[in-house]
Amino acid sequence: MDRIYLDNNATTITDPMVKQAMEPYFCEKYGNPNSLHSFGTEVHPDLRVAMNRLYKGLGAAEDDDILITGCATESNNTVLKGVYFDLIKNGEKNHIITTSVEHPCVANTCRFLENQGAQVTFLPVNKDARVEAEDVRHAITEKTALVSVMWANNETGIIFSIKEIARVCREKGVLFHTDAVQAIGKVKVDVQDAGVDFLSLSAHKFHGPKGIGALFIRRGLKLPPLLHGGEQMSGKRAGTLNTAGIVGMGLALELAVDNLNYEATEVRRLRDKLEDGLLKLKDVMVIGRRELRVPNTVFISVRGVEGEALLWDLNKNGIAASTGSACASESLEASPVIAAIGAGSELSHTGIRLSLSRFTTEGEIDRAVKAFTEAVGRLRAVSSSY
Image (cartoon, rainbow, N blue to C red; front, top):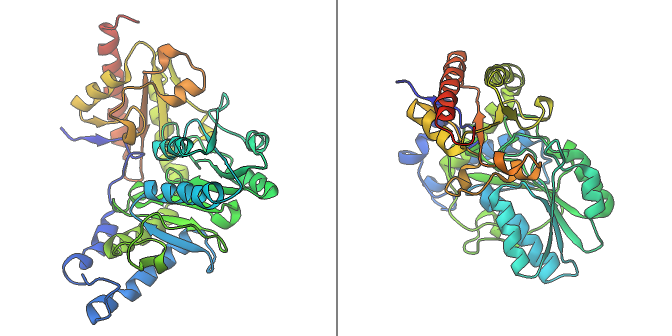
């Protein structure tokens, strides 16, 4: 049985071109980039090419900073804890604003900072599962140090009004960070146009390798390092540079940007075909209007069917899906997104996320609709709540 992968919001296949580009840095050009001998210095030109690809792919200016990290979780922690130490613990601010539907690495870091004395506002989403710029404006006080709002939600694919929220933060003199993990490679992300101060990304979400991420920092802004040690990244982030990962991430971002039109047309067409097929079932609900979502994501609630049960039925039939964030997959708590939009407690455990990529085929979508429909029929037949 050929398996079908529809969990691309959790991670993506590494593009074969990226894998090929990384291969020389494991056994041929394997020197530490900080070494002074030829094994170290010979990789410098390749790192410059990779960094230039990152700057170009994000639309960053030459005097902006892009910090290499191990993942977006580290990037998000760097911003949140850095602003806490600079402006709250050792400053005159005490307030952070975020949303009720952030990824756990933002939400749980904010809860940790609450325990350290910070005041955190978790803004609720509206009926479209979004937080709007005016919601942020009303929540900002003279004590607000940072606003952190994701570019696109990892469960629903809902896109937030980042440019408008950034404008409000600039007007109020408040720093603005966005976790863009679920937006990169799916919609256009330009840090200059959006006007963000900080932006986090992770390579494995756009067909790059796992274990490598980045943090955009607008020119003139500084953060204390999260990791202390050597003088790598000019002392801003200690740890030996992951040459293969940086090369892979740079190329992956370039390819992702090159394929944005394909995402907006063909991936969206396949997503809509999948969604239309699933909506033929009775008593199902898709979270979020299509025009407000990234082009690859469907988050669907099936009345009378537990999400975990449906997930395992699909898995037995070779379909990889998710009940939400892979980083929270061991938790059996209700979906915070379904709860946040007020869909009702009876639906809060019924959500299934299906997410496509540019490698998803038409035949896979046809098979997935058939397998999903049959799984729902089997599970509803034994359901005590349907």
